[in-house]
Length: 135
Image (spheres, rainbow, N blue to C red):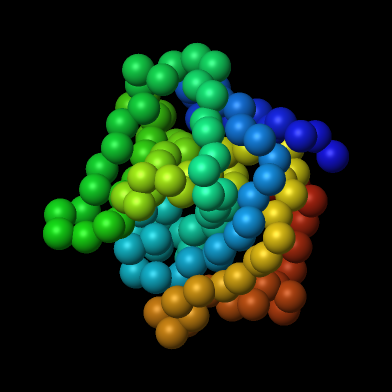
């Protein structure tokens, strides 16, 4: 497995690399993460004292912090894809798992805020699956 991972936004204008040493992978079902992603949950990796190396497009990265909270989001100003950012504690880096090009290595995987999980988000094993889009 790689010691350094690469990642990018959907339009490819923002590219980054980060060391492959994450402590946690959280699948968060809270209302805020659902609204931010437009999906059932957010899957985010966390590393303390991590460093994101912006390969290209750093000037396109935008951040939004929900007023009066610690809730933050970083995204590409062109395509809106979620991107890494330093959390409000100033030392923890959050990396959206879907932004990475390779499989990450992490110590713990946890689902959080399950009390806010929606009824339309099943446990997926009972749903038909296809390896590609269905026409």
